[in-house]
Length: 139
Ligand SMILES: [Zn+2]
Image 1: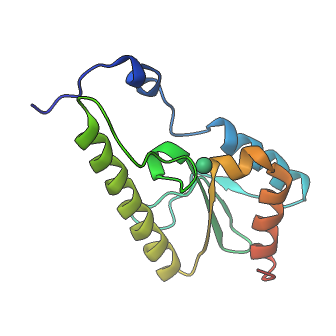
Image 2: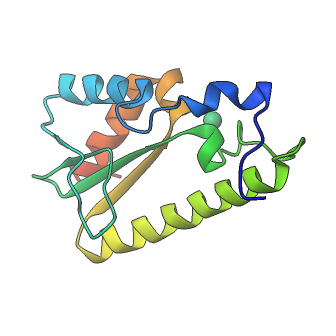
């Protein structure tokens, strides 16, 4: 009973990528346009690797997928179908890991910026400015 049941709704999720997702790349382009320099996928603590970091400012940036991290706007509030409990569990586990990552990164002297993929898609310039203001200590 430990296998995911294949459903039509889940089909598109199986091929998901967790690195270099579209919103991640979009945000990086805008951050780069602001003249900020970043490095990709650098671990800041054991088992804690942000999407990118601004080493100069010790800022760690994560772009969270709305579905998998439970965005208040787009995260599912109700799960249906044969995998309902599993999905719920998986998202809870992700959220716990996010909290843990924030804590260990901050313990290591990093400032964490977490953005939802929908924020980045809706306003990539605004999202990049958010990263910048945190980096420059204005946020
Ligand atoms: Zn969202």
